[in-house]
Length: 118
Image (cartoon, rainbow, N blue to C red; front, side):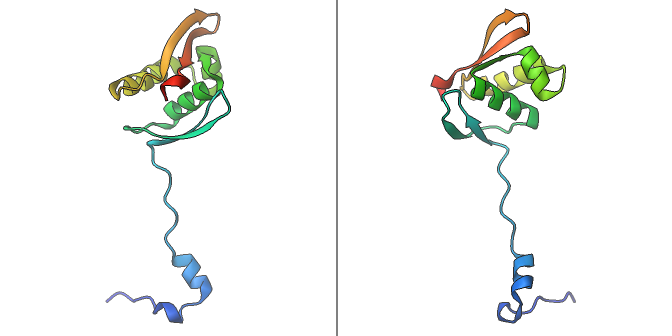
């Protein structure tokens, strides 16, 4: 038979603190965005984001736009176009047109964050 914890009135403050339920971690659907205008927004998405998709979304929201070279540097990977394409597909499937391709420059394809769509 498993041992039971003593009643709350018998436990010390240390015991109570060590057995409390930890706060919940943020959902993979919740994203903190700092927009190019300086405004901070918390957005709840209808789908989960992986860490790289989240970073792409946060980077584009913060700077308004970024090219593939800038995103490669930020993500520390050469495979940026697939990550951005997957993010854009998820957004489009949810009816959110937050990112659109911009002009191709010396840094590769540029992606533009459409703040007005938030």
